[in-house]
Image (tube, rainbow, N blue to C red):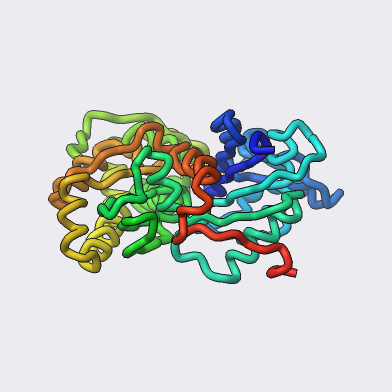
Length: 339
């Protein structure tokens, strides 16, 4: 039955799933396409993502998670159910499921996550805190009496935590992450150039032009949007400096959150963190120049984990082997608790 154990990194931007010894078996956007006329889900994941901004009025492409929490419980249940059926080959065996959640998630948000998993057909539901999963996936031995710091920058939240003896010592969760960075780019382009661009265009500009170490005005790309003055389609050349100016405030709010966690960390663990460095995980870890900027601002070596996008999901799946030792940041949720 271990081969049917499913780990889920339920991200605001992407959902990543693991199954047993197979490792990561699915990475798709957390998007649901819904037909308002027929009241039916059309598709989820990649196919639904392609529909964003391109649908007729009666079809909506929904992101059922916002800022790391479930904003549309029904659509989240549909999405999880469809993905579980996709990875399990529509078998009738009810899997055990571990779902990764932000470190400061509320009881109400916990309940929504658990209900979504139960409705998708799981027989047991476990929750694991995101920083714990991230460090496990990064290959760090968290059971020792030694401090490790992780910064997981996802699509909806940034989770910062110091972990020792398999437990969270200090932590902070910030609802400022990948999606907020995209929105900051849209806002900047609208304000400076009077051009409205879409979500996908902003994300592409972020991936191509983010340089937080030394932005250069000659490194540019062409984006397309709608002029707010004429209402007509236009194309526009923007540079690394534009993207830096757009996202600088958001990036430094993340750095400030890291500083606040370090200020609350016991001195002995601070020494460990100085020696071990700060581990960066999540899609935001791939922002150009971010590790060097953080190293400079914090005075601590910053390292990007191997395969940071799937790191949390891998750790979630690996947690099944450590059910007895992960005493903190990991809990079994009895089904009757939420009924």
